Image (tube, each protein chain N blue to C red):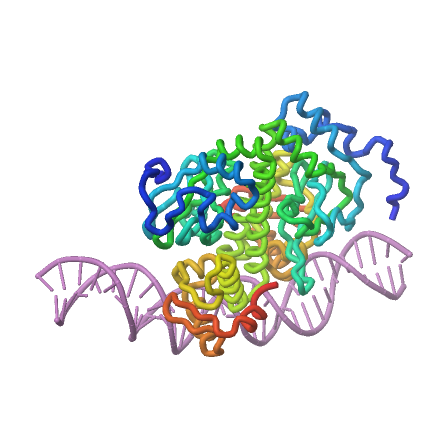
Length: 245
Length: 245
DNA sequence: CGTCAGTTTGAGCGAGCTCAACGTGAGTGG
DNA sequence: CCACTCACGTTGAGCTCGCTCAAACTGACG
C-alpha cells in the first residue's frame, strides 16, 4: 500500500498548500462543512504524500481498508475487479472529490484506485475520521452527505447503462466533466480527458470502437472538436440536450 | 382499499414484535450492532405504522427527506424517476433490509419507494438517528457500513448492466433473492417473487419480453420451475454458475 | 361473462459488438 | 537519426442479442 510510505516533508510541486485552510480545493472538499478551528483538527489527521505517477495504485482490491482520500490534483480511476479478473470502472475522481468510500463497510477494499496522470491526494485515516466526526456533528453530517452522493451518482450511472444509447452516455459523461471543471473555475468547454477511450468505454458499458465512433460522429455534427484527449465542446447546449436528464 | 379497517393496536398477523428486541429481523437489521440497553434507546425513536398495501408509496421523489426505513415484512421497490418521467428501479428491499438512504445528502428524496405487496416497515427519523449515532459509536459505524453496502450493491449492478448478458443478469437476481431468503431462514429454492416481470426488466435493463423468454429458457433447461411468480430453483448450482461473480 | 393488467410467444430489425486492418505518436535501442 | 515496437485510437464489414411490434393467453375481479 502506497499510503504507508508517504513522506510528509516533501513539498508538492503542484500545490504549495500544505493544509486544508490554504488548499485551493477547500470549497469543494471535506473542509467546506467546517469552521476554521475544526478545519485545523481535521488538518492534523490528514496525511499528504508525494505525487503519484500515472498508473500508480492508491489501493488494490482486497487490501485492508484504512483510509479515504481526497484528490488535490490529477485524476483517479476507481474500479472493481470481478473474480474472472474483468475490470469495471465505477468512477473518475477529479480534484476536490473524495474516493475510497467503498471500503468502509468491509475489512478490505472492494475496489481498486489508480492514478490516471500525475496526481496529488490527501489520505484521511478512516478510524480517526470516525472519532473526529463524533466530536464534530457537522463533519458526520457532511460525511453522510458524501456517501449518499456516491450512491446517487452510482444510481445515475445505473439509469444510464439501463436506458441510454451510446451517444447519450458519452454526451452525459462529457457534460459531467464540463460541469465539474467549471466548478473548479476551469474551462467547461476546453479540457483534456484524463482517461483513455478504453476507460470511457468500460465505464459506460461500451466498446472502445463505439466510443471512438461516437466521438467522430459528434465531431461531424460540430458538437465537439476532438484531438486525441483534448476536447473542445463547440456546442455545449446541444450536447447537454443529448445528455441524460 | 381496506386500509381503514386496520387498527394500530391490533396484533400484526405477520409479526407480533412491537420492538426491536423481539423482532425476528433484529439479527439482520440495525440492532445487530448494538447492546441491549442501546437497542432500547434505538427502539424509542423508531415509529411503526399500519401495514402498507400493495402499490402504496412510502415516499415520492422530491418529498422532504425525514427518515430511513427498515423492512419488517413484505417487499419494497426503490426507483428513480428522471425528468422525462421514466422509472429506473434501483433496488428491491426484503425484510431486514434498510432503504431510503438516497435522501441523506439532499433536502428531498431523490428516489421513490413503493410497497410491492402488503408490507410492514419501521420508520427511523434520520435526525434523531444522527444524534443517537453520535452517542453510540457502534451505531455510527454500522450506519456507515450500511451506506457503504448500498454503494457496493449499486456497483455490482453497474457491472452487471455493463458486462452481463440477459441470462446472466436474471440468474444473478434469482441467486441474490435465494441467498437473502436463506439468510432469513426461508427456503432458498422455493419462493414467490414479489415483483412483476416489468419491474425485473426495468431493474436489469431488459424488456419484459426478454425477461419472460429467459424464464422460459431456464425452465426448458431445467434450472427453474416457474409458475407465474412462484419460483422453484431446481438446479441452484448451475444457476449460480451462470450468475455474475 | 367481459374487462384489464400482466405474461408469453413469434417475427423481424437494428444498435452496438466482434473481428480485422490500418494509422499515429511516444519510447527505445542500434 | 532512423528503424522498430508497442500502446492507443480510428475505421470498415458483418453478425448477433435483445429490442420493437404484434398477437394471443391467463387469471383476478367486477
